[in-house]
Image 1 (cartoon, rainbow, N blue to C red):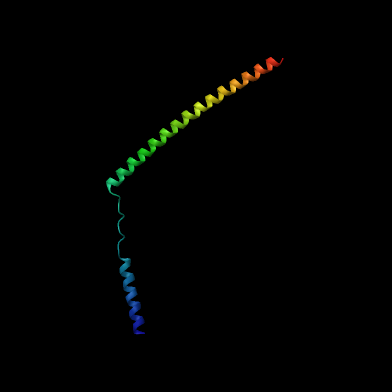
Image 2: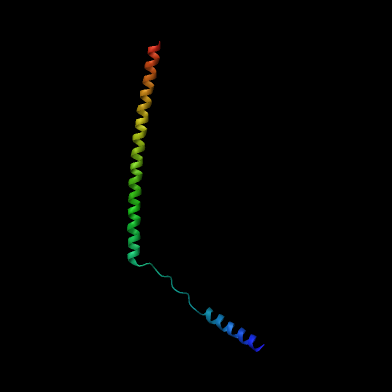
Length: 85
């Protein structure tokens, strides 16, 4: 019984002591790490912008080529129909 009472008292003392502790402050990343992250993000953004511009140009060129091919096919069908008459 005495041991249980002693153990309960000890646990209560530890719990109360822990309640009075302050939380540890959050650690901020060093400025060098933040600068490197910003530079990396800027490089990724620039690369993505360049890739999007290249994809847009390629799509426009592809659309123009498809339009030209369709026009040529239409002309060929008209010529074939005219020759068949």
